[in-house]
Image (tube, rainbow, N blue to C red):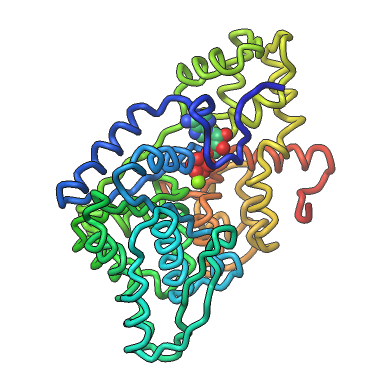
Length: 399
Ligand SMILES: Nc1ncnc2c1ncn2[C@@H]1O[C@H](COP(=O)(O)OP(=O)(O)O)[C@@H](O)[C@H]1O
Ligand SMILES: [Mg+2]
């Protein structure tokens, strides 16, 4: 087994983190303008496993010295975890994360200001522990009326700039990184108004940079809803797409970090094909390969097929959360991409009844729509389904 990082590590050491020098210098350069009252808003896109989260955490390390950098992952918010996405839940989470980081950095958290705000609005409060090890807890309002929610929203979204105003002798600005931003899609009917509202605050804050990120394929509608010309941020948001490692980068990476893997040239070609250059797959798969023995094409393919449920475990998790009908839909696309009418015919249902399911699968980036046809996005998921079928004679509806 080689010495590469695990696929689920979120923070890599400098020894583990490879390359991305261009992306790091782009991002840090853009973010530096925050100190000149000209904070940028950036969207970092890229498929799952490509390395967005580890990159953002590196950026945090780089910028931490002069800025208050808040990293938050929307998918860890309680309201998302409990399958109960709501505006209030997101505001709470946002507010907690900002206060937590501000306290950790020993800055003025405006406690008095916050208390006063809650008091003037007669909010009932509950204490929420944000970092038990550090004994940090903060008050969160219990909201009844719609009008109160509006006020709370205003307070929460203005907080970052306020924090800057009260700490400008100590920091050059704030950088708010929101990872797994795509989970806001689960706000459904509230999504549009959330994005437009959020934008209103974000664009007026000259000392707070926002970096939104998440696993979004390039076709994802959310990207155009955020950064497209008619999207919430109009042309104002800069988009940076993180690409998989090229074949050359992958080869350099393995030669340097895992020299004990002895690929033949054909073996390496197969390895690159299997992983598509996605660092998550590269690391997870490479860790399963036998060391100091010649790895030719056949050996690589065999090892890949034998370990596919491990390499694709995050996809299989997604798969398990799908309903029976959603699974049917994915399975119907294994042999070839299909037009919607043909898909409906294959499943023996009305075309209109597919909308919600297709949307959900697209939101999860499990399928995408190109040239009028639906197609499975994740080759690995497809391969896993094929292998399961060939071994068991039935598709894995329950794993
Ligand atoms: N620059 C890198 N160097 C080495 N390994 C990386 C790099 N980027 C990503 N990885 C590997 O891929 C895994 C997934 O990265 P992550 O940032 O979580 O992807 P994403 O957020 O895009 O889904 C990491 O845990 C790590 O094993
Ligand atoms: Mg991530």
